[in-house]
Length: 199
Image 1 (spheres, helix red, strand yellow):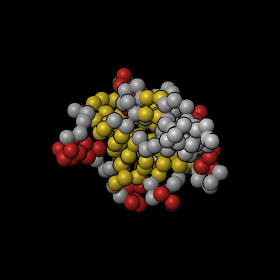
Image 2 (cartoon, helix red, strand yellow):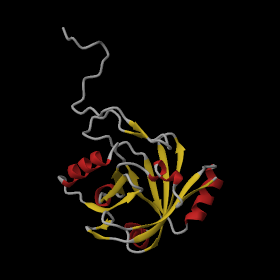
Image 3 (cartoon, rainbow, N blue to C red):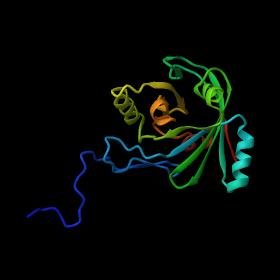
């Protein structure tokens, strides 16, 4: 006779420790999963030509808001594009449209970056899915796991002092990029002078 309680699911080979909840967004990072990592999608990201008109369109159509808007130059030792130093400016917004789902709109402004390349070759629209981890360290483990499958890091950078992010070149197989790392900007920049809200 089995000592497993009736109706109890068999233990998974992978068990994700208790989740971390985003301080501002309420986004959940890390749940039980049959995979070595929790790849729950927490962000859907669009690249656009005009950030403000896109915010206005979604606010009018769906009543979404507030939109948390960021405008910054990205540079420094951890700002890399295909392994080489990158300096660029982007404007972007993040909006929690329901618990656990963050919609992001990115408008590239200056310098070389993935979003400008995407606009030039594919046009506006969805370009990436965010599957953030509970920490920068776990994000690095995910990158190593993908590298063993031949999927390389395309771009990386920082948001604030404690969030690292990177892009995995999954477009050839998934048709979109994968955004990973230690968290979303919306959980960092409420006190930043480079961030503001559009209701």
